[in-house]
Amino acid sequence: MKKILVLLIISFPFFAFSQKQKPKLVIGIVVDQMRYDYLSRFWSKYGEDGFKKLVNEGFNCKNTNYNYMPTYTGPGHASIYAGTTPENHGIISNTWYDKVENTNTYCTQDNLVKTVGSSSINGQMSPKNLLGTTITDELRLATNKRGKIIGVSIKDRGAILPAGHMANAAFWFDGENVGQWISSSFYMKELPEWLKKINATKPAEKYLSKPWETLYPIETYKESINDSNAYEELFIGESAPIFPHNLPALRVNNQNYSLIKSTPFGNTILKELALETIKSEQLGQDEYTDFLSISFSSPDYIGHKYGPMSVEVEDTYLRLDKEIAQLLSFLEKNFKKEDVLIFLTADHGAVDVPQYLIDNNVPAGYFDEIALGNELKIHLKKVFDSDSLIANVSNYQVFLNQNFIIKKKMNLIEIENIIAQFLLTQKGIAKVVTGTALKATEFNDRILANAQRGYHQARSGDVLFLLESGWIPKEETKGTTHGSPYHYDTHVPLLWYGFGISKGETNDEIIIPDIAATIAALLDIQQPSACTGKPIHKIVD
Image 1 (spheres, rainbow, N blue to C red):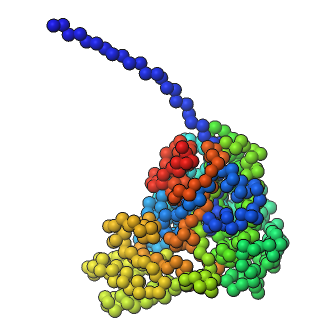
Image 2 (image 1 turned 60 degrees about the vertical axis):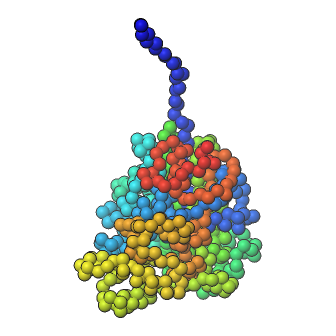
Image 3 (image 1 turned 45 degrees about the horizontal axis):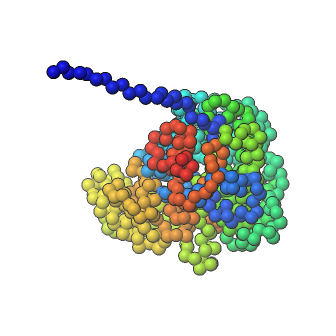
């Protein structure tokens, strides 16, 4: 029998893949200490072209939360842009105890670089402590470094961490008697000429030459408590924390140009810098996507000083609304809407002033971490007959003297458990978890899971404790702070606008690491190396 070989040839159509359309410019806006409810609370007073435009013509992720603690500025900015939490990117706080060097380290501190733009040490900063890549790094890699990345902020960490490791530049404000925008030798040898011209004008000067008065008649600020109250800090030289704040008289005893940080005009000079950066650096002017990160720091300084219910905070957001409107107007005049992708979020929220809560029958309090450290040492002396077990107590963590414990062949787990039992007896502490448990167990409880995602094995302490809702450190006797895993600190805005964004909103649960994953999907580039977020399907689908 003859065998017949039959060749079946199937012809497939040829598909030509064209490069995906991408925006010319991405603008990432972070508002430092913006609670989500500031959108709704001040809604009736906002204009049509700022926050309302982003909400009404963009996409509003209404249920966006940080999924870790501590909710601070450094970890917040790192998490937005790295697409993950401190357990991976390593920015566990603004400042933390370095277990290896036995000293405190600041999140962007780098003593190997020099200040560019002034003679101060405030430019000795870089992203070296940030582990892994950011979405901005990935954009630089994807464009073979042809896309520009620049970060701007009043705070160094607000400019540096979003810009990532490969940025073209990061600029921040040097206050006190300098009053200029500066950078670091990590990025450049000298400031660009256009920025030198801005610095020559002393950009903060004109805004510190007149009092800070309310934008509208103060009696219309119904969303805030009485301007004269017992819950707010004073500027040095003030007798009451009330409007108007006489900035020309106050600057002498309040660190001169640094005073602008605690006024809405810090947002103004940053907006001016952002607009000039786009123009002078020619961002968005070629086929390669550029990225400008803008972090408005002044709301945080003001929020710390006066608290969420203050007239000062309300006035700050009404003015910031106008700054956002001017930024959007500039972009609309110079770009097509589909050529610019914008997102706006916050690095954390804030708790209402605890004393205000107490006075209104809401559980709250003030916790003395220094006293706790002293009492803990006394307790351990009684139990173990040693006063050398504790190396540091900070950021709601207890760091043990590991070398001493190893040398004495002591049981680390026993010591951790004894500390945990003691901490749970202290008023104001809600939960305690040991480092051993954090390494061995995956927590499902929202609060403990947040603590776990904020725990970096090499950098964090040996025992973590969480305060009760409404409790803050004792040193914040006026005003407020943040850092907790509770909703007032974790729930923040997330607004999308421009390229690829359809109008709409969602109440789906979104976590902060989803931002970087979503940008990666929209730009069709790699996610950051340790990204744990997922693209927001209602935006990218």
